[in-house]
Length: 218
Image 1 (cartoon, rainbow, N blue to C red):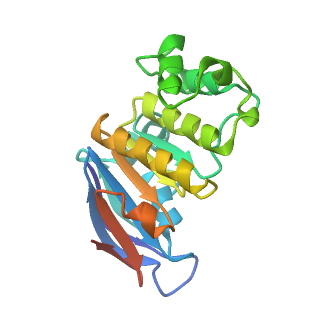
Image 2: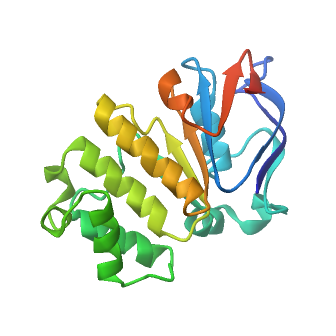
Image 3: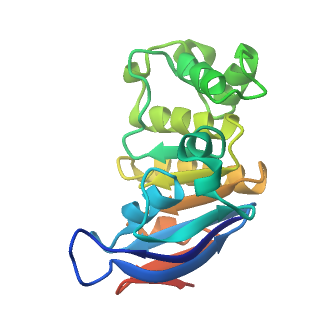
């Protein structure tokens, strides 16, 4: 379980906190969607729980251990996987090599298992011929599927996504959301998605709204 305790943050010398004393828990086997207006602090919050940045006050715990104790690098390498709107794939590699590299860098138990990676890509409609292409030759929907499979196959139990369907059409968005649901329900991961799209938000198991500096659990 990922637990946020008394998280408070403000920018620079601002007297008004972006949010104050936030207490939230995120369980495995569930998809959490976070919605809020532009500039409300959704992406900033993701950066804290992903270990990419530190809040002014408060703590974040993974299974009872403060992530400060785990160490930011160790936490990001082994405990959390991030899916970005812009995919963040290694553009000079094929889809397959992107997956293989992630398995190697994170010391996954499936490190070096090429067929394992190919089978996973095939399960989301990316055949071997496309898997071996440079990722820049794939469509946006295909690239996002590669990014999600990369998050799925590493051993991290927490998957965090920032506007993962922002660049995709309706059909591809539905496919991506189904993949996230599968990550949580079939692969027993904790999935946390920030989105501006109310329809996407409604597909989560738990919907959290960021309104007036407060997180409200629906």
